[in-house]
Image 1 (tube, rainbow, N blue to C red):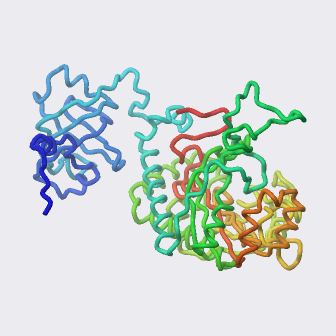
Image 2 (image 1 turned 90 degrees about the vertical axis):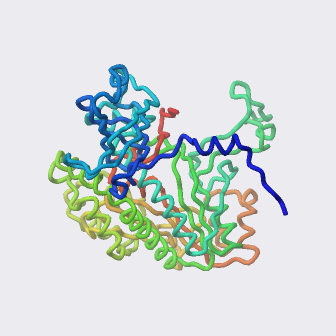
Image 3 (image 1 turned 120 degrees about the horizontal axis):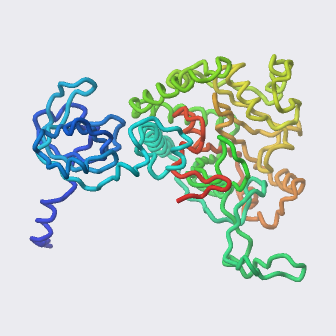
Length: 494
């Protein structure tokens, strides 16, 4: 029998551990009244040399710490400033003040980290989102971003929960790849070749055979093609990871680095694909509503205040919580691309020339068109199917009409497209023709075509941009405010 000996010194260190603390969210439940606790956090405000509002990020609500006169010396009192970090030990007592049920009557206060009151950027006042983007390393400490990123965490957890409960396999697809899943060409190149004097071939082009991977490589724009390989063995897989687009799009809807969720399912057609995507979106929203009710209530109020400053015609008809409830309680509308074009052509907005972009069969729907369909016409999420083959990727299954493909986009209020997907073309000959027509070299994609050569099956999948989902659930108007550190044209801080 093995006997384990624990060194005495180690056990003493454990007994005197520093981090024996209670989180503020737990304290505010009021279940610890009469108990001695240790709480740690950052000072939001300090009043009358006695009342400290402390926050540790577990909730937007602060715990009030009462430091009785004489507990701290004059020098220490001056160090308790906005942004300073404290370790407080004391008794949880019922609060006599308004706005909180409990407070901590301090018996000991240790200042863990000072904060120069003159230099700390986040003084206790309202800051614009533009200002906070410039202070992205500190903005997590504000109520707005505390709520946004706690919700982001919950949504990420709910993604894994949804697919795990349905037997999907989580597949990590490569971040560095030699393929371009979209055929778009807007990619970030990865190379170890010297930029000032790269090796060249006889025709003057760069000789990538001398590069690290021996070929031209880039950061992935999608894990879909590799995901299809997994689906051909496991039946259902999903990816959830960073993707990159080198598009010079300085808008409130685009990022150069963002996270994508991409399930791929064997033995699924376009109808199965739509059903899964709808259930997925509704699951994510329900999870956030159940586990982040406090944060969503705060953001709902914030959005309501923001809407008041807009012209009446630009205001949303639904509040944030109303919008989220509406999405989870209603079936998504399903229409064809042709139906969508006809609705737009008959719309008052088109007839009064209010659309910036032209409407005709064959166009790629613009955000203004998508939002009209969702917000003005149907007033709920819409799934559009049957897009023209000419504007869609090579891997989408050709419909029997020879003009359209079995593609689907889910359009959401406020942001337009939130999901894009399709039934994949499983017929080898048709796929090879599509690739030839779109000038995609079949020899370089032989590994992908093998899935059609050896046991092909009907299969489908979709991609959901995680930041757009977070944007939708939080009501934030700019996608840069729902990712911790935004990567956009001419901006790569941290």
